[in-house]
Length: 97
Picture (cartoon, rainbow, N blue to C red):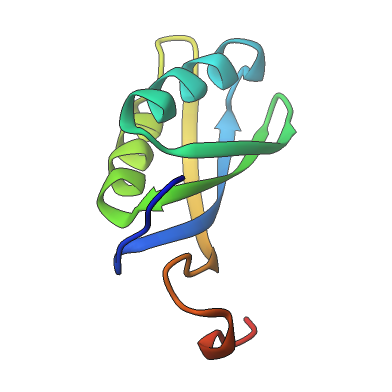
């Protein structure tokens, strides 16, 4: 990301359910790209997908909503989110989580 604002974060998102990662991961990538979010997949399995996304909070919220509805061949039971890094906060002001 080239610029960051006060509402931009890096979050870890864990998606649990019957997630069929073979089709869901490319689906998530496309939607995150459309929203302008950077993403890094940490785990992709049949029951869990874990990724880190970075961008404005509102757009991360939109990605979460899209993932909760997902493609037709996916069943999402739960989505967990955890802030990894407040991107716009100077390093000297960050607090460990």
